[in-house]
Each structure stands twice: as structure tokens, then as C-alpha cells.
Length: 148
Image (cartoon, rainbow, N blue to C red):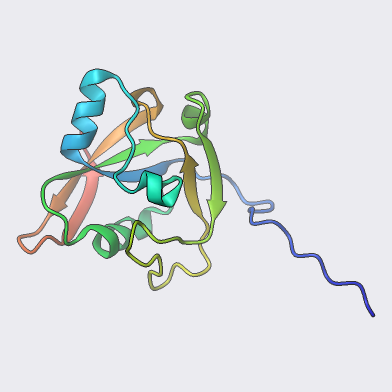
């Protein structure tokens, strides 16, 4: 019987690490964590076991509309680096798409993308920039851009 071919781990070989890792958060929850200087955890953290992120800016709106379109209220986009997250004790693993709570993680065009999953919450010290999120009247995410 021939030896089984060993599959490589889910990491990017010889690929540059992304400049930023983005996470979409309800503005109110982030504002509360920021005011208290406490670590923010998304509502699905306990179920999912990690904090979801993306490093591909082209996918940000698709991710937002897929997972959060039915949500109410304002959202904000947090920009971090692997280094800033590491300095706050968060491990980042690039893994295949995964469900957010009970919403399936399959987004058209993302099958070959490895997403940054943050094994921990987001402390305000890890955030290097916040981006404004503009939503339309039906809850659709319209744009994500420079903010506060």
C-alpha cells in the first residue's frame, strides 16, 4: 500500500501577511468596551470559539451583508494588525470560512480564502483604526471607510 500523501496545514506559504485584519462590531457594544477599556467579545464568541475577521478588503461588504444585514443599529469596522493583536494576547489563525452563530459561513467567492480567526477578544489597545460603516434603509451595508 503506498504511503498517504500528507496534506499541508492551513497556512499561507510564501504569501505576505495582510496589512490589516478587520472585524465588524455593533457600535454600541464596541463603545461600551472602549469606555471601560475592556476586551470586546462578539455575541457569538462562546458558540463559535473565536472572533471572526477578514483581511481582504474586497470581501468586507460581502461579509457584512451575508452575516449582519438583518441586524439592527449602527456598526463599526475595527482594523488591527497581527502584531497589535499578539501584543494583547490574541492568537490569529488563518482558517476556512466558518459560520457566525447560526448563519452559514459560505459566501460566494470566498471558498479559497482563509479568514483570520482571532482566538480571544479585541482589546482597545489592539485596534489601530476604526472605519465608519454606512448602511442603507433596508439594512444593507453600503460602504466601509475612514472614520474616527
